[in-house]
Length: 329
Image (cartoon, rainbow, N blue to C red):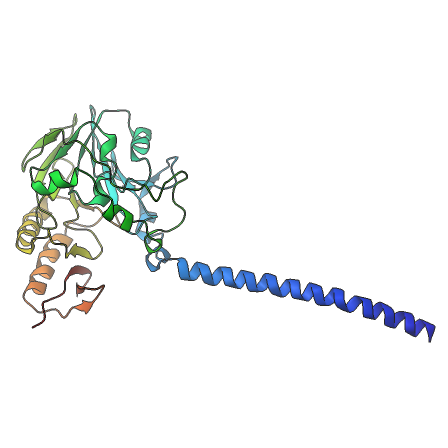
């Protein structure tokens, strides 16, 4: 009986310990599950699609700032990609023998000038595909920024806070923001227009000439660039492989239709199209398809699907346009 009693006593003491361990394991499991569910809820849908498979085919260039990824889609052309923000904006550093040209300076969330300094030691001039906030965020860091001679450009050169703040809400960010980034103070900083660029202007980079093509529509100051010798066309937001935004008040659909026709006419003379969002490479054959798709939409032959308030999405095969919702009567 004594042995039985002792055994029973040990049993009695063991039960609380076992129960405590079980509760601890259960709590840890609950916390892990909660953490996973929280991550699933807080991770935006667009972020789950990353990394985009098309980047596997491109040569990656290592840089020290993890906010950016840099790829070389053509010799001495560097696509500076910001995959951690929903715009997935892409700027292009085009390097000649005497100087370099940066086509768009991104969000201004991290230091694009430092990244550029890791890619070239040549003097850098800046042109913007247009002056929406996600393309001019680093303009203030450069002395020589060319603008287009429009009131829209001059107004945006004054900087803005409202549009910038909308870019860093939780649904717009994938992963951590850069160390030291001040979200409350974040704004598009003002920059100085050093000179104006016009349709047909040519920039000699030394052994490489870049020509300006006016492509208004998305904005009044939208431009594209062509490197005729290397058969490269940089299209900004006039074309990129994602829903093309054509809903803002400054968008002119007639001008856009004319601009994409102008670009489509260049398709036989280029080998690569480089747009400003999501993926930096597309085939020239997409440009006449873009014209056909947009004409089909404007002819009323495509049924739109509702998107965010006041906007609808028109899809034609692999092309899509985010536009203002038709007026209801």
